[in-house]
Image (cartoon, rainbow, N blue to C red; front, side, top):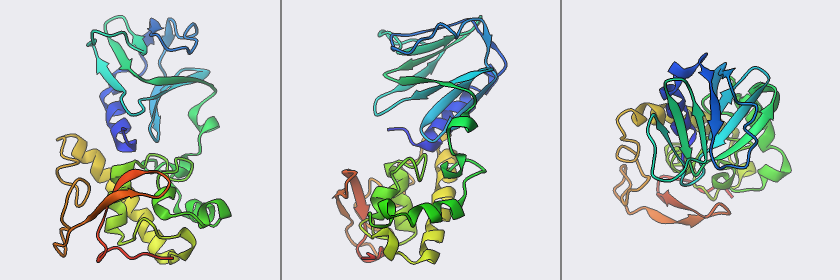
Length: 245
């Protein structure tokens, strides 16, 4: 599944279409596309794993899920689930989910949780994690909660927990606040690194532990298994990463 930086990377490929007129929208998706005709595309934005096409009074969210993809001025043999057409170009999405939203993105989404937004607010996240529904959970699960860490996917989750030296099965309320603050900084820093590595397609190759077998620091074997409620493959060094319980 694409992670927040992957979606920002796609957005950056589309900047030339800002302010252009969309002649029509098509695709087999169920969302009503009748309002997207001969209308100016005001902006292209992101929120976590959602790519946002912003018009005057509404915007469209596109989520690629596990298997979605995007092509610019190219088509697959199968029909697109959603497409935007311009006079001289088209953007095609495959196996993507779309949603119509009235208003502007900031009217709907809380940018304080988006790990790649300037508005990302560690103090807000700290207060959220004090709530019982998060405080008693494992940090490895909470990191994947898009209501708290919007844009975090499994690669980011694995990498930042290793860099912060926190075991993914640590209980949130047992993790020292200074350690949590370090984790928040690691999330933002690695998300930006991830985005930069997208340019050369080296995210997985240059990951420290994701997809690896040996800890790069002490050269011991990593524990590789599905952990927590999220049931995603997790890479852990039992020597480097402390479990807080």
